[in-house]
Image (cartoon, rainbow, N blue to C red; front, side, top):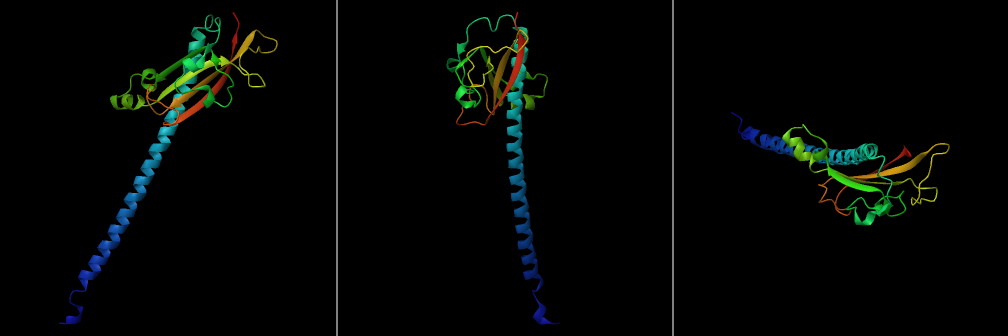
Length: 186
């Protein structure tokens, strides 16, 4: 029996255990980081979808209120908007518009599973409709499409990664979108 090799398996086993533990910890760290990144991307994408939903909701609202929504004077948006404020939108120069609205995504999408409905409550949109801006950025008066009786309007919509009453410009992720539409005068 060779006594010099006695106990050689124990240090090798411990060394392999340490190496395997380090590899496992590294994999857990990488996986955790990737999950966090994917969650952030999902949150950003859902916020964008919320802003798109605001545009779609505004278009539907305009179609169903076509004869009345632009008959009255424009209102001061600063009194009605909570977090999709004109100073947040680089292409809007003014503070007047026709209507504002805000909703959570769970108010817009029905028939989903309870978990999905709960998740959708955490995303919302706010929008307003104004005259499309002229070449100087002024949106205080209507611009007509040449040769028609159609007026240009711009829908400004912001998606937020929080409920509509909790969203704040300096705290939440906000995505702003705008869409220009034309409507025939009645």
